[in-house]
Image (cartoon, rainbow over all chains, first blue to last red; front, side, top):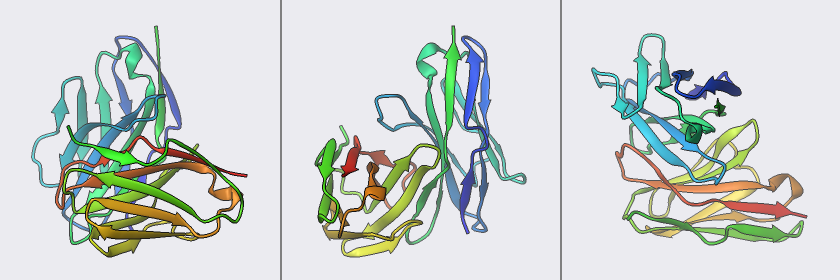
Length: 115
Length: 112
């Protein structure tokens, strides 16, 4: 069965510091993609970053990077230099490639950035 | 600009009513998804569709059905709404082997 686990329901971080949001996943399929989405209080789902299972390098998008450890089945999101606007819910998601491309999400981590 | 549009932002229905939640995408995507979002539970997949008239159950399909008669439209149907279906419902679409899914703005459904 495929599963995404986010063990941190909530986190605090000081403005300008880096923060790591944890995500572990479970799949027996060798081909899959991992995603992080941000959901601010407005409710919209904002795509942040993507990592393919065969990608050799860790994905980076501006202040976001994905710490991909395939053997440990973890895909942690690192936000560098946190800003007040980073306060939001963050979801990790996985899609297993194949005919149906099912996309599943974790339970989310609520990040609060403190001034 | 890519767009996924859900027919209503807020909806209030009575117990036992048949409820239709509509989702339309303008990106010619093969895949469409319906999730419900509840505090502490994240996004749970109700149903998804990978082609017209093709559908698969997600993790929590009980009490729901779906319809995809046209590629751009994916409907979620609550056959007989119950109070435990009060939730935020999110629709998403993505290309066949796409790197990301695009989300609608969500429908907050309250069943009274």
